[in-house]
Length: 283
Image (tube, rainbow, N blue to C red; front, side):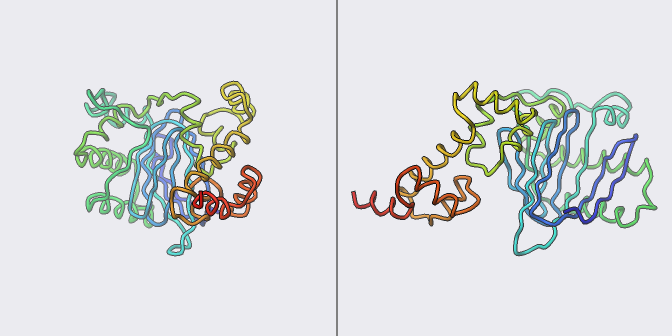
């Protein structure tokens, strides 16, 4: 549930956003010709792209290039609400911002393979920048287009100048170039994530029916049956090779409920997870 949503627009597009929400909540992000900087002021989230995911904790940030994402805000004992600040990048806005000639760091960077999502290291400079945005969200009457242009340039320079590895430069140079991946890469990357078929279809950028058709064509098996089998096979290996609790194994293999996991395990292996551990250890 969204409790608060504030937005500043520039060149008729929403650029700066502040959102307060009550977790748990999953927020899809469809960004075909757009990129985004996301900062968690408070709360924890797991950000999924098609073939990777990143944990986002309080006072951490990520930059996401164009693509489809799912932001899973998690319920914790520390916070009742989550707060995030998002800054959106559009190619036409950046051209206007830099008077049609983009800086060098938006151009090709050699020897760097950019990912679709990159975590931004926490720093005093970044915290100060976020605090300055918070001030303007609390005092919107002070905001005008010239100020927004300065703040947009400021975050871009901050990201570039604090990038020691060069990975952020690589990401900025490919902000609006979609990451290519195969259908199998998407499936294999998300087998043990607790994502629905609808959510996987969203990450792939297709309808649910199209996703199911492609899955059956590639795997010769229904997605529900394939995912359950792979999850249970991994769980069986962890049960006999680790001392993890059954509930932890169920969660790590993508099951949201221990009871559902136990019933599925019983159907697959003919005994409960606990009995399976005992029998295998005695052999």
